[in-house]
Length: 341
Image (tube, rainbow, N blue to C red):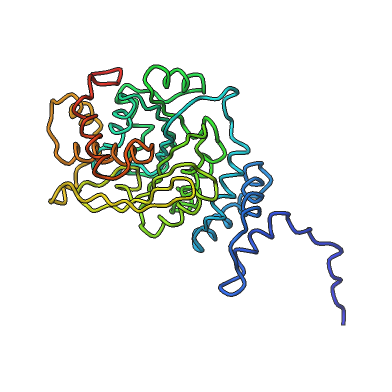
């Protein structure tokens, strides 16, 4: 009986295949990546050495497994090594990642960041282009407030020197990560990039904030910040995943100060739950700042978020002192800091 000859050759295994295999061997055979493995894997993706099918499989396997602090630290290290950073250092006090977008309620956290800047703190906010429908991202909201996202690092430097607040688009320093975030419309899901991109801290600010949507991620983010050697970090569950304290809920924050970790609780400032159907209308921000409208929820969100940031900065030692200082900031906030009234 005639038998077909075996193929003379078959393709060699792709160098990235072991990383997919490590994550996809099944419930008993799979394992998490070690930090150096995660660093190598993301480095290969950002360097264009990985087939798009492998990238999709890798990200979704991570999503199902859920990331570890070691993996996040490795991914961040790879991203930082390839980041397009300014030639000369730019001093910044607080790193403020903004990657979730608001689906309900205006982005009050923007006023909190501007409030800190108005009182002398240099704040760098960075975020992505819109990659999810029905959400308002900082990159969309800030231009409506008369604050343009920076087009290069020189504009970041100038904005920090004049206004003490600057917004750097992710594509400015890591277009590869922005491209990975843009895959959401193909996956129908957020990917692990949404988790670790918040830790990039491109200008190496001594203080940073991390927000999350699910309480279980707090320990994960704290572990990643510790592995990355972040001097000061505040981690809490923010409204919609943004760094915005919810004034109608008790909030547990994890504060990292070097090797010391403390739990700090903010008690709810409002008894009522608030109207969750309110759309994220940017126009309400400047009118609240200028006193032309009153919004108890918005004002409490701005003050509470500023208080959380002051804890991250080391400007206060506990929630009560931070809220007292943030209320004083709000009372003495001065004229609207945007370019438009």
